[in-house]
Length: 163
Image (cartoon, rainbow, N blue to C red; front, side, top):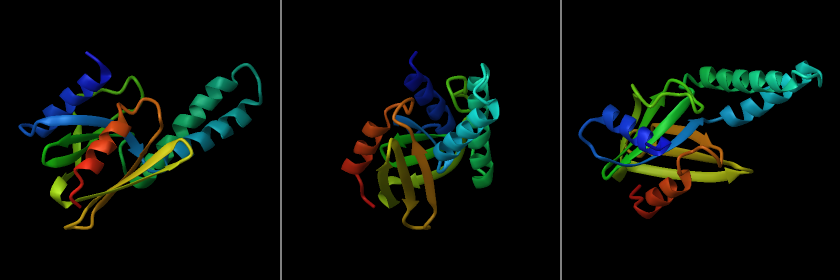
């Protein structure tokens, strides 16, 4: 079973009877930049020795963790799309080792009330999903690798946008 199939199965279990058509993996807004800053600081602390890579990875994880806590968001957000609804589901861990089981509902927006904006800044895609009835917005971002096909996900939303 592929990562995308596992993600779709986890999302399906989280939302119940509403059939999930597509999924994508994102992180809270600011996590990518915070991770890069943390990685740079980690490299500086490592001092160029043989353990610099370990310091960089530690800095990356610390930076992302600080960004997530600041926004009170989970480490990663699974976007799940059905015929009628966009779901944002909390994933307790990011990376390849994060589980697709026990995803928690963050936001549920009917597609007829969904406004989607997106823009690319460097290699990072920034996305905002707004419920036009309540004004509640979810801001996430994703890097070009490991996102479970965010470009196709966004194309699907753009082609059926009703907001």
